[in-house]
Amino acid sequence: MAERIRAHRLLTEQGWLTHQVLTHEGGVITAIDPIPADDPVREVELLVPALIDGHVHGGAGVDVMDEAADALARLSLAKAAEGVGAFLATTVTAPLPAILSTLSRIADAMASPLPGAQLLGSYLEGPYFTPDNKGAHDPALFRELDLAELDRLQQVARGTLKVVALAPEKTGALAAIRHLKQIGIRVMLGHSAADHDTTMAALAAGASGLVHCFNGMRGLHHREPGMVGAGLVHPDAWLELIADGHHVHPSVLRLCHCCARDRLLLITDAMRAAGMPDGHYLLGDYRVEMKDGVVRTDTGGLAGSTLTLLGAVRNMVQLAGVPLDEAIRMASLAPAKMLGMAHRLGSLAVGKQANLLALTAGLNQQHIWVAGREILPAPAPLSFPEAGARQGAKESSCI
Image 1 (tube, rainbow, N blue to C red):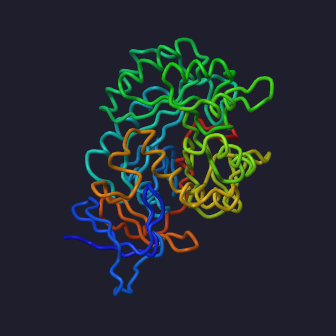
Image 2: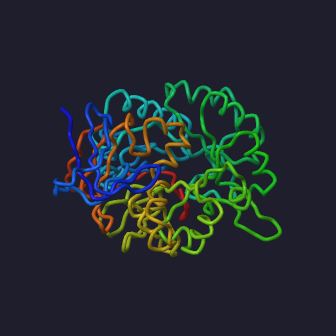
């Protein structure tokens, strides 16, 4: 049965439309029309595309690497409660058997719809990094690039592996990038000590962009622009950003917007403690404390993100002065384009999947629909399962 949603303002790829009614049926948007002048009813203030979190490790007490059968379902509900209609389940450096098992579980989970946000596939973050700027990855588990091993990963993932992150200075990186691109997998660069020229060569070979720009890589310097400088100026490089005001300074968010406006991908890089109350948690071998939503070690180092993607959108508007329509596109249409899914996701248009997000004027979530199905708020998460904390997250920086 067709459902109509009347909005005061509705965001399309062309910009905001006022007083619009969106109709969807069978999980697809079938019409977007002006509201008749004699119809005073508006169900929602702002209707925008549901967000896409292209890089998330966990939340609500669960982790993508968890073996629990309901871990991805719980994460799916948690993401929907944060305005996310689709996400990539992101792994972390671990022994190869654990990675293979996780990729297989993700593929299994994609066989039928999850209860909340749609699972788009997997994002392999590690083990193909270098020790400098390793973040929360155990360098003892880093591996060399091997084309046969990459093929095995995709075989186990049954075609659901969408993104592989790697350090471009590793031996065989350019051949691996070309190979992965040829089989339809995006390559993101990070957790690396690569300089500007090495990064540029990797982007020329077909890499798609940078993993959480500025974190886990060389910073910007006027004589050696580093990985960051290469990403900022390369016309086709997508840049992931953790816009929580902690991982990246608000002025740097503004800089990124000035240099790469249409190439920014807002992500959460969220970990298990996201969406949980303040308190002490285990992150691998570390006991960390979350206070006011920021997780730190006892030495004060950042220990991953608890950011929500809708919070990242608000931060780009409030901290970086980015127009709301642009900030929403950084978390919807931009990731859809990067993943090659913009024909069905990422914006409100007739024929696209009805992944919809209703917001108040204050940018708080009212409703979310995934493939036309409204997702009701999930129950409060259970207490943090310390015994299930992922082993091997040994650094107090970005995952």
